[in-house]
Length: 292
Length: 298
Image (tube, rainbow over all chains, first blue to last red; front, side, top):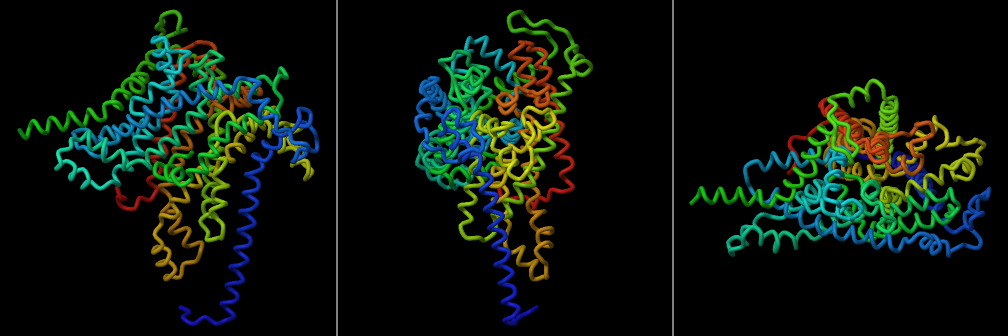
């Protein structure tokens, strides 16, 4: 035990600490720079002319910047229409997820009934089952219902519990709301459904916000679902649209500059939402341990 | 009266969870059973299924070289990307847990690539990996290395996709970071009193306390990498020479391009079993290295 520190020792330690800090800063800076290169590269390409995109050595800041690429890319295929389709799917899915997931989460966190814990365990296990395992029979079912090439296969399942992930997330949140609130309401003559609707849901707004953010990100980026269920060009989502746009490079109707411009526009909502709701987003990731 | 109340509370509980319960039957358990039945048939969607016993499985295991190729590709990718992501994510989380000024800005920057995903990211990386005009090879040529034709070379396509997966390493980082910040500081203080150095503290406190988080990320990482599809579909279509024929891509081709639903159902069932097996193995072996601190919280 060194209760008394001699000045020389203290000095040496601080010098070492500063040195370590500088090294750490340099490592962190280099890492951050490398991770940002793809974004810079995308934006840089998006602002170039068609030929300029293939120029070596590349110009990081194109002169003059072709701002019109964003407009040209967006309108070469009807991305406005694709955006509308995507938003319709996202909004209708979200409504289903918010209400059905919170209802189920309420049952799993606030009510006591035989078999509850077993069923909760079953629900957690289903999180491990990839969508592709059940994809073919589900597809056949929707085909039988004549729902192929409509938005229904992408929307309707959300009304059946909204997904194990969201139920789990909301249940974890509901558990943090003190049960005394329910008891007080019950004394006032509230039944469970009213407690759910009037007490728990309003208090759970932050968690519901997290659900909304994740749901948006997943729907926005979902590719395989729309790929198998949507056939018509005018029913494409933005993800399908970009995939088609990219496939057309071979026919020279789209250049890499335009593809990068559209890709950038499609990343933008996710980035903006992340910046606006960073805290909720990270909390959601942490509560459930699922990556964005 | 009391009995009535109990019955009602049971009914009510099941009413609340009924949306999920119905969904479980219609969209999970039903399809799993149905896909097993379909896997025993030949079914092209237009004509009724034709029962053929286990012949789909027999063909898969004994004759289908592409099936083995798809398993191999997926396994190599998983073995490459999951541990790398784990180690890098953990190391970055350790860095981000240091008390440095402005570190929260860096946390945001490191996390940013994990926020975006899907087609836009695949398209971006396809452009990054271009042999002559892609930024990776341009930067490599600056230090005198002639970069490979990443996506066009059978031996480089998987390394390329693994590099790409590392871009999203921030996703794991946040989870580790939360875990690191949840470790009680008293543990470190007590160890310091016992004269433990940085490394000793790391080995005796950080690693065991973090093992459940690492374990969770491992399980989810393996399952996630088995589902790789968009990258392969957009960037390589499984090529060159099937070197990036991921399992799901192969399943998709058989089911939705060739309409061999029975055969593809057999593929789906094998995927289900493989994931079950991997999860079990990870769970079984975890007892030795995952440390659970009593029963935690909830």
